[in-house]
Length: 116
Length: 110
Image (cartoon, rainbow over all chains, first blue to last red; front, side, top):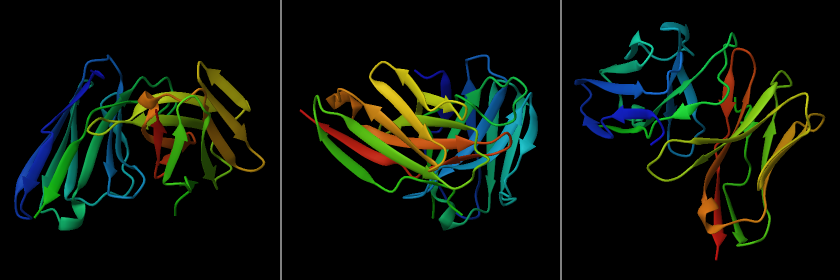
């Protein structure tokens, strides 16, 4: 148990569907992150939320929409995705102390997304 | 633009021997470096880190070395154990950005 949970673990969706990924951290951290890991590619940072405010976007397409209602929960809303968006989506959290970039992060197990 | 590179996709070592995983970076602004370990079906787990003001950090069987002039860092695991078999990611960060390598799959044979 890493203290960061993600649901669902697996998701198959069509290109016209709307779905949401959920992340919850039980570590009392004040920053949360979404990452994308495509096959044979490095982890890509998508979004950063610090103190519930988005501080990093990294030019992610608008079909990905994050939401951070409080410091323990993070959502990634998905809409009209493309097959190339199929990947492992990882959530992470950390305790930030005035430094925007993450130091030691704690990752969830990820959601394996397949877009058909 | 891959600023952090792990050129060896896989590494196989015998139990008890030393494992050396390598990582190269191109951005001289990176000031903090981390190694993560990932088992199948789990998220990455933080392993060890090093600040750019140091050239070595040791934690038990794990030691990270940083050579700033060569823009190179390495992770040494000694002695290697079968439970160390996993994918290892290096990461480098500045104040505003963080980049990961593609990972190296380590297999430790009994």
